Amino acid sequence: MDLKQVASFVKIEHTLFSLPFVLIGYFIALAQFNIPPGLDLLWILIAAIGARGLAMALNRIIDKDIDAENPRTAERHLASGSMTMNTAWTLCAIFLIMLVFSAWQLNQVALMMSWLPVLVFVIYPYLKRYTWLCHFWLGLCLGLAPAGAWVAVAGDVHGWAAITGMHDGFTDLLWYPTIFFISLGVMFWIAAFDINYARMDIESDKENGIHSFPSKFGETATTRTSIQMTLLWFACFAISNPMDEAWFLMAAGLMAVLNIIVILRHTKLADFQTTLFRISMLTGWILLVAVLLMDPSQGSMNLD
Image (cartoon, rainbow, N blue to C red):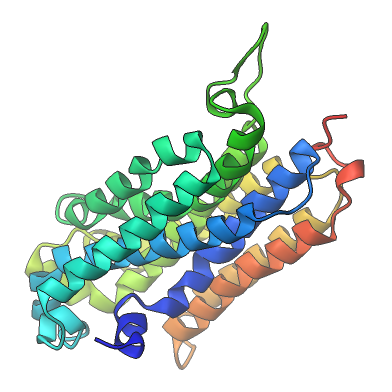
């Protein structure tokens, strides 16, 4: 086992999907609680890499037999036999240690909540065997990214009250509406991407009993529903608007339009999947830049 094989196994390039929203959650928390960046960012990034690697490794292990039956995925490491199950489980252990150790370094709240993403990751591969709602569950997996980064900071400041809202003498849900709608928007964003990604496997999914949205409802419904979900994630980001400035809203609107254009042209693009992947990845980074351009002292996140 070498680093190149590990990177290929967990599709390290897909980490670029979730990373900007991890950072968005982090910088929103800094602005909300008026604190400077610190070493927490390092542990948040290590935790994010561990969580992403664990999710991918578990998915590959649980889907080993299904991957072997699909011509598109038959050459994946476990399905083809180029990596042993022992190696895959070892990687799972390493990624889990990265996640839990980083959470321990952050605060008690982060550590005690570290079980949640693990449970969500384990459920996803099985869910696709029973319902097309699996796409939304995958969205939930990545929707935890900004919420987790926010908790890593908020837990230091407010402890369990950051989640429960139960402060001394008053109740205040600090995660609502901003982080809640950011995370919900990420869920719809990933779900919209994933149902389009599943277009590649319609016939294989039908043959192997995989309940993907395209295999159940067809191409036209997939296009219509993914556009509707794109509008939903834009609405969520608009509602969450972390600061009372136009940067985030304009960035979300621009990227929503670009995503819709790509989806509508899926039959005309030479490589629809690659184009969609790139525009979807760009979405997160553009929104991160918009957050970084904001002036926290002028926004709704300022608590002074």
